[in-house]
Length: 585
Image 1 (cartoon, rainbow, N blue to C red):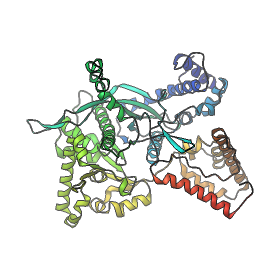
Image 2 (cartoon, rainbow, N blue to C red):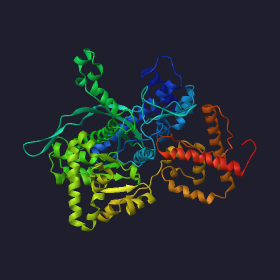
Image 3 (cartoon, rainbow, N blue to C red):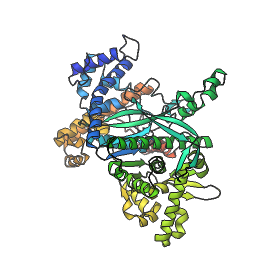
Image 4 (cartoon, helix red, strand yellow):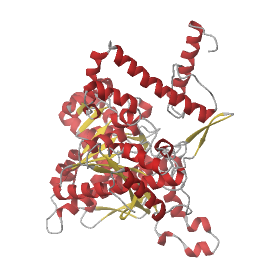
């Protein structure tokens, strides 16, 4: 029997069994681990959908200001543990699955990580989504639905092998496709000047952005926000039936093939011009689809009777750019306001500058994105016109108000006109156009203010802030280490630390408490035993759980630091062996 809002373990077990029978994805009469995972996920999704819909309608009715977080990656991790933990149903689901002949930990292991991210930038984005949902803040995440991710790591005789991620080989039980949320995205083409002097971007190729929504539940709250992922597809009318029947199979489906490339891989190689074009396509695809969606929602809330007051836009919409990847949101919002909505430059610029904020993640010059002007003109001609105008007005501002910085204009401006390699400096565009710029640690933010962006700080001193990266204590303590969580709750005499980590400072007074120390060591050893069992299952190697573990949970890819880190672990191990030789070590 279906029990979509079940809380009792018996009703949850019944709802899981219902999904196994009536939401089938596999042959009937099978209820092995994989089938049990999908049925369990769908039973959890039942509850999330109710909360999700209620949250959406609440936002629609109250019409608060909402945050829209644009990020090229989200390192979400497994969703099942997080969802039942945030719903406070871990125990009930463990009991329900036990009744059905399975263990919760075995079911959880069946879930493949969503291949939507890679590193700290993506994990920060996911932690923000979790925190905003838990704090009942009205927020949306926007990203791309990568089919094959960055790469899946596998070790063979020759070392690390890199293969495509397979998280969508079957399907994700968490995402819901919104067939009514589709926007056209244009590439290439040219700019027409209309009789009244306005400009219109036309021609080129147009593909469709289709929305897939993933629920983001808050911890012990009914609030469930959305991560909206865009997938790219071409229309049926873009398939050339005549060419196909003539045997020209590849050219008949050319636009469909190009559309599939956009959301195929996270950070595709950009050594070639085609690679650079694809990366730029990805970035613009994310920005344009998201902004069209945001504007449509803003207009929808006004209703058919009220006239649109665009000056209210920044009081209802906050767009946060996670690093420079979504920088094209700046000229795209300008284009949409001017060319589609009919606003003048001054009004569109005021709205854009009050809407968009920028998070910087790096001070390394090679990591600050710079795009070839030739590639930008080819792919996004209208946006280059807008960027040129922003650059022109910024340089005029410097000359009129800060003559002391005139000698530095070539470094500060957005367009680098080096004849050997003319580029668009995306970080400069973000700083000039955003109302707020933040670093992700105090040291990092101080370097931004005192070194990298020092001259900009002298122009706009109040624009720069620090927002230190945090982690969600739900996923990283409460749900993954139950034994340690129980000890913390027992000694603090409250569970409030799960939403207020500052309370952990009260554990300092227990540092010399022998009973506390013993419980802490016991919980640590339990986790080490679980790790040793995992190592044995995964590799066949037996390790002593009393060992000192140094672990890298990260794929080794082009960045040198992953390789350096694991070499550092080997170095420390060898140094320990030399300084403190032990038998059988």
